[in-house]
Image 1: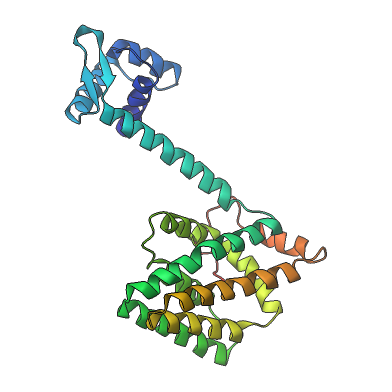
Image 2: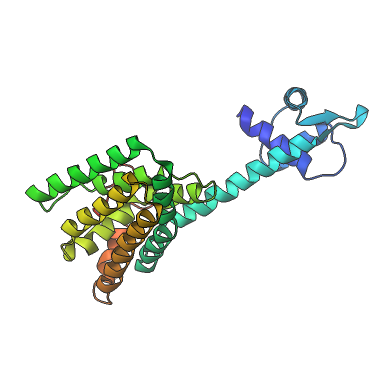
Amino acid sequence: MEERSTEAILEVLAGVLEPLGARQIRQVLRGDDLDISEATVARRLRALDRRGLTVSVGAKGRMLTATGRHHVASVLRGRVTATRFAQGTEIRTTEGLIQLLRARRAVEPEAARDAAEAADDSAGEALSMLVDEHRQHYLVADDVPRDISLRFHRRVARCSRNPIVKPMLDVVLDPALDRLEAALDVVLASHRSGELAVAEHQLIADAIAAGDAVAAEESMRTHLDRLLDEARRFLTEETAPIVERLLTWGMPVATKGAPDVVH
């Protein structure tokens, strides 16, 4: 409650050009269904003064400092980003599934390049272990644990050093999208391409271990191109309704515990 009211006070001050006192701020907050006492508003303002977010203008009240305006702008940007992300994870159509794969194809090759350029032996070893685990499971059963493949992709993504690409990777590989990956698994399983996925991951891991940035980038792009092509060929007029029913599975409930996909 304290954090909510403090942020609300900052937003009230951000919306005006003149100083406001505790009584005026309280009146605005009451109109927004946040009823706190004038004394509480005054205490919050003094705390904001100490943080350098507000400044007293004599008897007129408080105004935001430059730091305060920057803080409010950052909070509002965060809300917009959170809203957009929530909308992005509410994919219910086969078209959305294709768009997810296209987004992954756009950013994951960059992560593979960064991984190779980082010359991180621990990353190379971790990726090789994941490929070996994937291969061993595939040798004994077609039903390979889906989390193995996504762990491989997420481990590559951790190597990204690009401050723009990194948050994009966080979005396209976020666990909230695992139910989409589970639907995609239906597509890939129909083509029985598990062994090919192991081989493609091996090529990516080998290129990263060798520090070959070009090969790592191209191997990841080739891998995701194949996934995209298989999805497009599978998603016909007859199969799309089945996949779309899978895409709505668990919505709008959070996807914690949803299975991952085998690539």
